[in-house]
Image 1 (cartoon, helix red, strand yellow):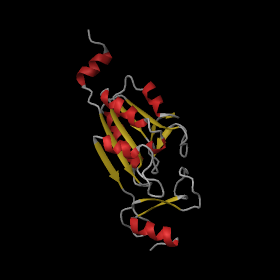
Image 2 (cartoon, helix red, strand yellow; image 1 turned 180 degrees about the vertical axis):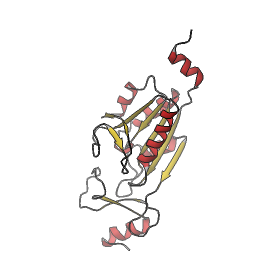
Image 3 (cartoon, one colour; image 1 turned 30 degrees about the horizontal axis):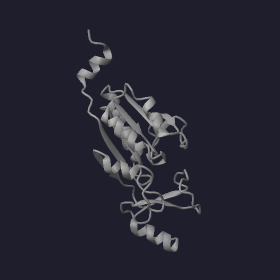
Image 4 (spheres, helix red, strand yellow; image 1 turned 90 degrees about the vertical axis):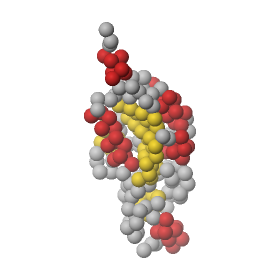
Length: 198
């Protein structure tokens, strides 16, 4: 007699992979992450979602997009904690991955090697245009990379990065529309050089 968990494995062969969804703020990264995870849940796959414990802007435990779509998650402090919750999981979602330590790369590789589909969302660059956290390395090893774009508030073209609108040089400054705005390459250069753009 095949147990319920074993029957699930025979019906749905586990094929591990890493998918990265990246871009600037307000580009729909979390929205796309939630969409993929909800589709997996609809297909009756076992899903677990993680977010950095430090990110409680919208909710302590939910992953929430700027459009207020949400999905339950487990807040964690270190990437290694992910491995404690994924023994019977088909799909792992990780939001705001730029805030995790570099160990996230090895964790994602291990999960994929174990047959788990890993979907990672995060900023690929900080507010200065510098590659951010483990995201660039994850993009290099991913099976699939989706770069999404916001719309530049200066000219309406595709945005390049998240420009910080307040005087603060901390690399990590959690915020929403009041602290950041998406700008294209040209408008960002103008904003940095003259504090104004067209």
